[in-house]
Image (cartoon, rainbow, N blue to C red; front, side, top):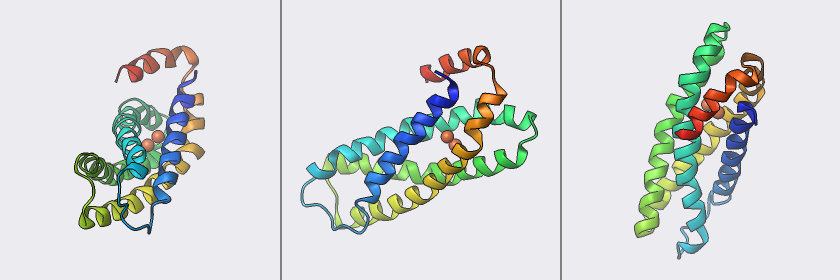
Length: 157
Ligand SMILES: [Fe+2]
Ligand SMILES: [Fe+2]
């Protein structure tokens, strides 16, 4: 599998979770955790693997190569979005962990709604941009042979 395909699949998975999160926008706090439990687990999973690890990999291994290819503008824009989204994703992750342990309070549900809306908005836009530019650029930047050690490295993280 090409590196672009791995990153593309993670983007798609994130979009699915964002879509499920969007389904809870404007909804009252659920009486039971059961209907939202799997989504909270997915949020934790996605914010760890598809934000934390995925962003770090892009920043360490892809953005420097893009810069060397003269794509400073794109890298600055995408890194700026990472900086913006990372704390939102982290806050949403820890809120989801707490909710799984102790359920929601009225306040934490309201915060969950706000953080979800921010995460959905910024992350959707970010993925759309990367899908238009970065994903195609990766195939042009690396040969399949050059990608092999990068893929091995990424799958270890
Ligand atoms: Fe990114
Ligand atoms: Fe990405």
